[in-house]
Length: 344
Image 1 (cartoon, helix red, strand yellow):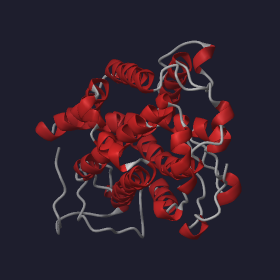
Image 2: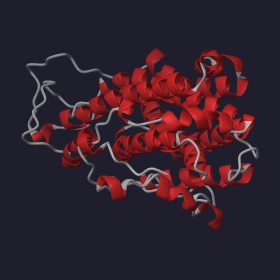
Image 3: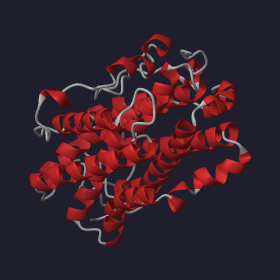
């Protein structure tokens, strides 16, 4: 895949000449006239969603942590470790994807996403260093080293990105882009459910508030890739069978990991509900990019966690509509609205 020069004086930034990839951009951010107007609105939404994790109070969570069962504490630690990996690998991977994008308005969205991924990692560090006792913290950061299931999960996800870096072909670029979409649209959400489930039982409310904010950010990332993937399908050689195979394997890995770290040991979550929810997410994400559902049956048409939707919907406090069970994103508040989010 070609990567953009720092400055290309022979480029042509005329809107009629723009494309997501393979354009002749000067690499200047000329945004007065754009081809992809949806990217301008999305960028504005992403910027308006600015927040600072340290502004959210998690002092109650320090006490609540010891009110969790041993199984809940293990899941809390393991899921934090997994989410740290997800946002870490995105922070490293996205610049490689961005370097081949030739529409400046889309490049701008991806630059903001990189910034948000970094802030998410800061959020996890804030939680780990504040909530988790000092003698357990290194185990959280190093969980992937000691837990084979998590190690396999991480290596599978990173493998698609590394393949493109090692061999930057258009085919590998498309697969890395699709892997990005699955990460943003599927891999976080069983973890979110765990924290919202605790909040529904009046446990770890500050952690749930943080994940509510991360959740809103992830929605905008999902929306970005829901726009990019159909463009990529029209640009790059690909096989729908390969897409379905990637989704199916992703579901299998995600269920294996979630059942390993949560299983049937957490009140309100079961291995069956995890499978239903993960397949429901896969179907929803496929539909959003114009493909048919992978899993047939009414069981996978609805989320088994609809009762937890209110814990992720910040509409009342933030004048928003940002429900992570849906694909769309609308208006966000400015950073001054961070204080005063719904408490459980």
